[in-house]
Image (cartoon, rainbow, N blue to C red):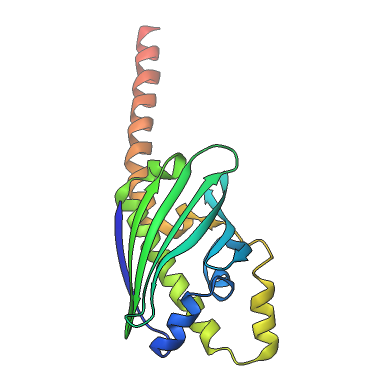
Length: 198
């Protein structure tokens, strides 16, 4: 699945570029993500995802496989697996930094989140990118040492899970309500039929 997103660079391009290459600065900006280790261009982490009453915890690794400082273009590959074996996720993310940050993602998801479908995943990912951009802008605007220290502390403190249904909001309801109405109609039909047979 290919996803495309873009947001206005929240600071000078060079500053945004340097921040995006630093997992320790970016991790607190990612909803549901917790950084657990960094080794050069590779890093490890966790992402919590909530899907209704079900909570999934993905553990995985990522690596910058291409970094073009002159063009401010980088390619990141990441993959993770749900700790309970409910699915996997892998992505190749290409981003280019200028007046805007343009992000192209090749995403593969298996398991329960995949049941949401392409349209809903695109809707959710778009909102998450928007949240990330807001958090990144806040991080880059911070010049208070205490605030910076607090952000760094967030790297090792487990983040709240991404609530996919809450994030998607109305689109989920639009998909769930027709199904619920259909189930209700079938249930009523069965009840009425049983009454008639009596």
